[in-house]
Image (cartoon, rainbow, N blue to C red):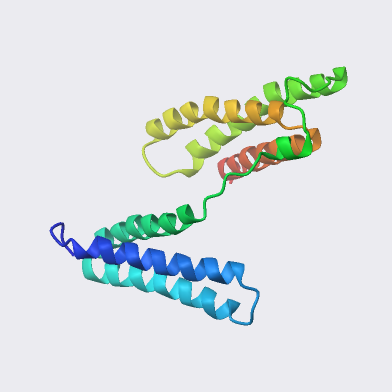
Length: 187
């Protein structure tokens, strides 16, 4: 497999299409053939990756990941459907039009603000602690990760109607990231 070999990407795309079609049929079909279709789809994909890796090593596996994904996305694009959003189907109000209760607003503020910041800081610290590389690079990238994660926590908390779900997920992120970072530091 070299850069001038135009057949390799085409064969990998065809393998991606075949594997994705088999997997899609297995997902749709409730017959006794489901396990066989699933196995056949994964065998096609695995064989394509193995052959590409065997021919050109790491570069072949990289090309296989790209072109198999392109083939699978072509299959996915054929089933594209535009459906009405859940809010339109169920009559759910947008966040800016729903009735606000004072205690719920206070909980949202605490989740989006301080607890979201602690979760984002924990994610940045965990990134700095657990990723390989130079210490200065890890610290800088962990610090740059904090505002993005905090913004995600804020957006999700303020848009979600279920406060208990937001509280549980953000609390779990805080416990895991800060806990594992402290565990690695103290051991």
